[in-house]
Length: 634
Ligand code: G6P
Image 1 (cartoon, rainbow, N blue to C red):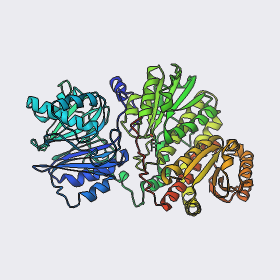
Image 2: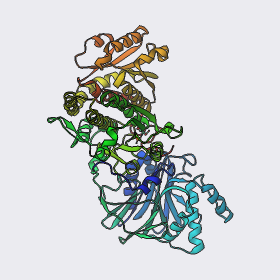
Image 3: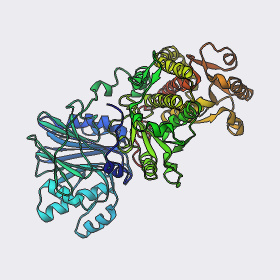
C-alpha cells in the first residue's frame, strides 16, 4: 500500500452520484459447503450494519432464511434448518427502505420463487418500476426497493426467456440508483451473477471457488487474488471456474486481478474480548506504522509521497478546508490547531454534511482535506465532490485501501493502521492525528514558519510517541478500570479541554456516549461557565484534560470552578504534576511531550475509560445500538 493515487476521472464523478445504502453482502460458489463461509463472512461485514441478516443456499432447491437482529440471531434461527449447499449468499442490513424485520431482510425472492437477490444500495426509481411490475401481476411482500429489483429481473428473464446474466444486465439498464448485487437462479445452480454501481463489490478468485463481497474481509482467508468490479459491470462466476465480466452496454471486459495485502490475523480479536480493546492496545504499533517511511527522527525530517505532486499548491495554499464526520471530524479539529500553529495556514473545519448543503465559498487556491477512516462516508464523499467541482485541490486521509474517497481525491495518504472493526474509532483517530501532524510539520517547515530547530525537535518527539503510548497504556489501565467502576452509573458527564485538547474533550465525550449510552458533552473548558456549569452537582463526573502547559493556570481555575459546585473531577495530567493532583478527585497521568503532540496521548485513557464503563454496563462495545462503522447514507 502506498500513497493514494489520483483517481480516474470517471470513477471520481460516479462515486457520489447517489447516497448509497449500507449493508454487507457476501456470496460463495465452489466445492465446499457455503453456509459456514457465508456466515463467517457476514460476521466480518457486520460493521456495515446489523439490524437484520439473511442467507440463501442452493442445493437443487433454494433455501432462504432471514431474521431481524444480528448475524448471531440468524445462526441461532438456522440451527435446526437445512443449510446444505455449495453455493450461497448472505446479507447483513442497516435499514433505509422499510423497517428492520424478517420480511424486509435480504435475500429477496422473485415471484416465481426462482431467483434470489441480495443488494447494497438504493434503487431510486423503485416506485415507478414497482407500479409497472404490479400492472404485470407482480405482488410484493416487503417494503424494500430490493424486492422490486428481483421482480424486475424475473420479468425481463421470463419475457425474453433469457439466461440469468443477460436478464440481470438488461434489467439493470432500467435502474437508477446505486447497487451492489448478487443473484442466484434455482434453474441455473452452478452460477452466481453480480453487478455494481456506486456500491463496492470485490470478487475473490480461489482454487475451485469464487467469493463475492462488499469488501475483501470475508475473502482474505480463502484467497488473496481479487478483482474490484467497476461501476456498471456485471460479473458471472461458475462452479467450473469461469469468470466473465461485461458492461451494462454488453462489452466484454478483461478483469484486472490484484493481490490483497490484508492478513487474516488483522481481522481476529487476538485474545482480547472486544475489537475495541484490541485496537486501543494496538496504538503503539499503528502510530509507528503510520510514520514508517515518512520520517527520520535522527536526521530530523518528515516526507509524504502523497504530497509530492501537489506540494507547491499546498505550500502556497491560501486556506485549508477540512471535511469529516464523527471522530474524523475531531481529528480535523486538532488539525486546525496544528496547521494554524505550526504552518500558519488558515483552516476551516467543516462537518461534511453541513458543507455540502450550504453553498460554500471554495476557491482554486484552497486545499480541501477529507478525513475518513472508511473512505466511504456518504456526506464526506458528496462534500468532496462539491469541492472538486469548485476547483479546489482535494486530498484524502484514509485507512481503507482503494476506498471511494481514495479514488476520487487528487491525492492523499493512507494512515496504515489496519482494519478497524470496533464501531467506535480509536486507532484510526490516532493514525489520522499522526498523519495530520506530519503534514503540519512538513508544511510549517516548507513555508518557513517553523524554524529548523523546532521542526527537528518536534519530529524527534513525534518519533517517541509510540513508546509513550505503550508506557501510558501499561501504567494507566488498572487505574482507568477503577475510575470506570466509580462512574459506571452516571447519567451525564462533561469533558473539558483547552487548545489542542479541546477536540480531545469532544472525542472523549463521543466515545462515552456512543458505546455506554451515557449522555456526555465535550466543551472548551472556559465555555463551561456559559451553560454546562448549571448542570454540575455531586453526581456529575467532569473529565478535564489538563496537560497543556500554555493553559495550565486557566485550567486550574476551571477545575476550581467545578469543585466549588461540588463536581467530581477526573483530571488527565502530565506525569509529575503536583498542583492539579491536589485539586482533582482522581488523576490519570500521561507522559510529557510537546504540546502539539499531547492529543495523541491524552485521548488514550479516555478511550479506555469509555470502554470499561460500557463493559461494566453490559453494553456490546463493538456494535453499539443504532450505529454503524461505515455510514454510507446521508
Ligand atoms: C461513523 C462511525 C464513526 C466514524 C464516522 C466517520 O459514525 O461510527 O466511528 O468516526 O462514521 O467515518 P469515517 O469512515 O468517514 O471516518
